[in-house]
Image (cartoon, rainbow, N blue to C red; front, side, top):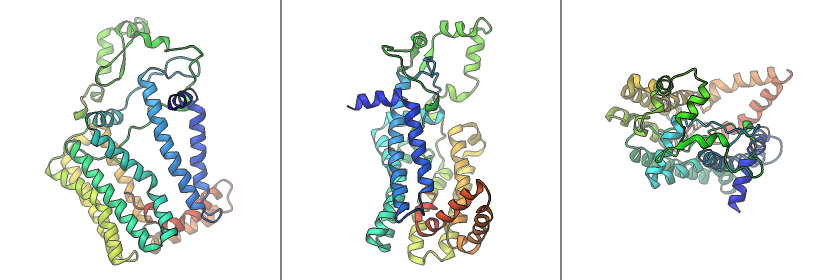
Length: 362
């Protein structure tokens, strides 16, 4: 049954992806439309994320087996990103790493839904207990990943990302076992990555490139040939302190909010200070090397964007952000197309105010 479903997903990847994207778009416009619409929206969003991750795994396996073709039936050349190489090898080396990564991703997908359901069914006190326990478990899982990876940076997403745009894929023709162009390739025994044979490379170059030039071009980017351990630098003492502070920051923020209240400036300022110190310590440890490794560079950039969430957290949101957003929403309300933006701002403002995980950035 699962094998038949996997074949269906691979052979209809473009259509399946369109359905996923349509459902994700629906989740953005549901809040505020009817009673408990936000719960329905989060339920759909959570389900689509779980299913999408499973589909990504199916497409990844199909890519390694050379079963992906474009709309003309030609083999699709899949380039394995540094992010996928790193997390893939970590998961292969350690079953604990793989389980911890899957559990962390599952919590990230479902945390908003859990908070909403608990709040509506059991009340505010139970909601804050559930939020606290989710943050405790997430922090524990990230520490496990930090230790097993050899004290390396824990990225926001810890499962392999989609390697190919499903919209560009076609279906294998009836009776087609393997794309013909893949017959001249060989697969790495440890990585599972497919490489073109020398004869196949030279035939594609049509005599315009020497073998030496092709090899030189292939290794020009160090990440193409670097071992897994070199893709992310191990932390020293300074970086380790910064990473631990970043991991514990959401939990400390929740505990401070529960003790001092959401209207107090102290949890907000304390969380911001912890994030700034963490960023300084990690940057000091990585130095200039962060820009040389795409995995680290992308994660550092992602963490910069997390500072925007402080604009949406109380009490800063109540004091400074809300009024400005309301003026923007009112200005957009009678403008073509922009009225949708204004409507989204108005619909999501109560969610930012009421639920922790909408602005937690954890």
